[in-house]
Length: 360
View 1 (cartoon, rainbow, N blue to C red):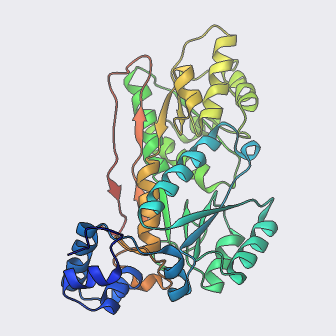
View 2 (cartoon, rainbow, N blue to C red; view 1 turned 180 degrees about the vertical axis):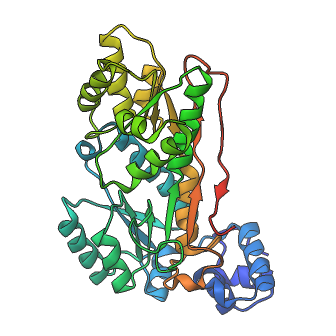
């Protein structure tokens, strides 16, 4: 039993669990070395006694920083949709704290600057691994981390590589195609027959995945799809211009599904300017979408954060796992989004928060 006064120690835990101090240390720092039944007994004693290992001492023993690095994206670089990364960062920080892990934020203006930060943080033993966001085709950050065998998980697929079969790539993503399918089917349920898609210019892995959901559900002939699919910069003014051109054409669409809330806002602006009321659905369910009454596709950011940490440390661990082959199961997670309907048809909320695993 723990003493009635003072803070419980590792010796108290060892006595309560009927194991050695070293076994308790292994459960805390290297749980993969301990038999499951023993680990459960020690974890039960830790919970009962409310024992908390001293973080600094643990870092000295394990030569680990108990810290994960992640870039703090500049707000101006992400526009309205930057709130998604803000929400993810908040959720990741909370979930990491529950595991005794700290989040270290760093700033980097461009890929080369971020690679330099990678090197510095690793050389100075500031972090045990990284979370990478805003992934792109041929992402040099990811290829460098793989080559250097540095643990990482990306929020977003490492586009253009064999990410489904190569276990060196650990990633978590939200099924953008499924989200846009839900959005397209929703406006069709409201009577829309010709749904336009407003996305981003190629190449964009995220944008092309979201466009694929529209292709699979719009029900249009290929030549009509080409007419109703536009790619512009992720800015409301650019989207408004592109949507205005579609509305002024001889055969305008009767609904718009967009790759982001920024683009959806632009579509709404073009409609308001012409006194039209047509269904518009965005993606990311930002505060702007809620304020404007726009339907949007919401990403389960809390689930994303938890999945990221599981792929870094295992389901219950508090230490970054260097070798992804030590993880049980696939090294990727594909999560389902939720369609948040506002305005017309708002009672028809569609939800999907279950993890979808391609290997299941």
